[in-house]
Length: 174
Image 1 (cartoon, one colour):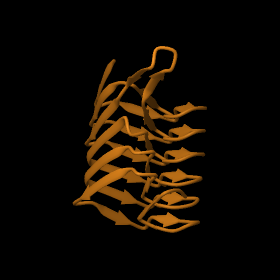
Image 2: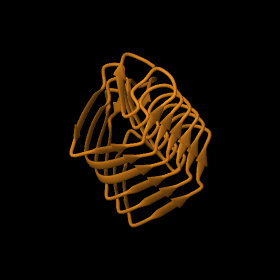
Image 3: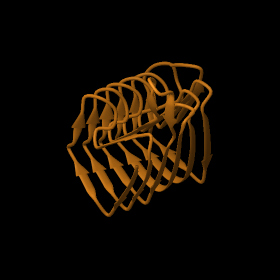
Image 4: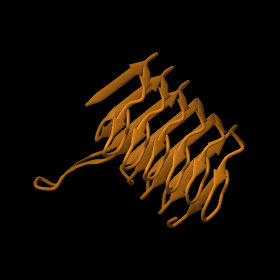
């Protein structure tokens, strides 16, 4: 499956699982010039959750890839990882550019963005402003064999209330 989202707004959307606005599972997605405001997820990724699709009966696995550019995430939150964006599993890749994450909150790790379980994320020309994590990585959390490439990015007034990394936390778990 493929998803293309351009110049769209997601306001106050919620999910009991991952991705308060958009859940990407075993697909390719491009989101451009869009706004996510006050989105919430009980699991992870207050606005967007990206993970692999696995059909265990047939041993079928599909990768997930997401390109997010020129977007804004404002006041999104998750009870789990990633107040705005959660990228989970070695079968998940996200490329994020020219995007703002502002006042997002996670009760665990990654106030704005959480990357874990071997996922790969490239972040460039990003503003992380005033985000907060209940544990580690007020702006960005990179856990459990994951990879994050960060360039030309600003971290301003982000906060980690637990293990540390007001801007970025990286480690095996938080």
